[in-house]
Image (cartoon, rainbow, N blue to C red; front, side, top):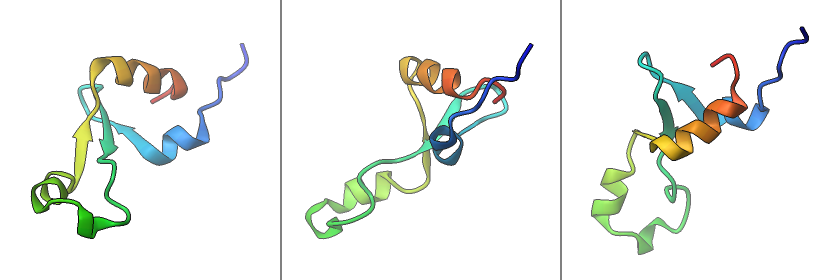
Length: 65
């Protein structure tokens, strides 16, 4: 059987935890931060766990993840 390719965009943006959940960076944290509240910027630090519906899509992009 041929090997399946991993989507390059997915391997740059997501990684899997030990239990198989998908970890991603929080959105809306790159520019125009003066408009955003301090609470939003504080919550957007670090990473987040994707919802089950989104994680299923991302896992299809990373067959060996």
